[in-house]
Length: 219
Image (cartoon, rainbow, N blue to C red):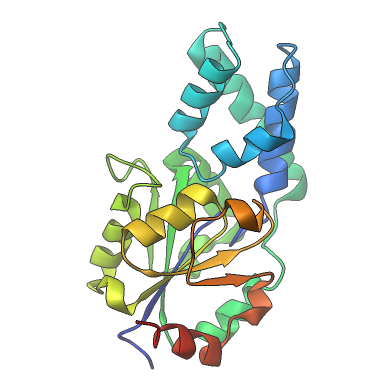
């Protein structure tokens, strides 16, 4: 086993296929207030903590609704989408089978505790990942390195021996800020908008032992 090597996964858009579900719920929410989110603005929100998403969006679009009411509506609409369509990302389950027994595996997500536990109850994420960092466990969220630093601390593994799999601008930057090897999965943001990850992949199927061993040889 490559016990000295750690792979940390993001949740939304990497482990589970939720980015379109968040978008549907959020589009519904803003439509109630006569607001259409421009396509180019979505990249600003991907990988944000829930708190930062509502701070940014309410300020950006001039929403004057009570924050708690607005947030609770958003949570309810997103939950409805999750209940209908929640599933793992294509290739994720097969990837975990390839990695099990070979590498340490953890999860680092901006998703808040209440939502993570709801998802965990349906997909049994705690059975997949040895350690998990969710939103609120660090004072600062992505793109700050703190969530990934905590993830590495849980395993007692340093950045030199850690690979991060991310899909958002904030997440990729967080992994880079933590000095890990960062693999960026396309789909959530355009490649030209991504920070300079060590590798860019179009599918989780591209990750195997050879891929990982090659990545860790990068200086």
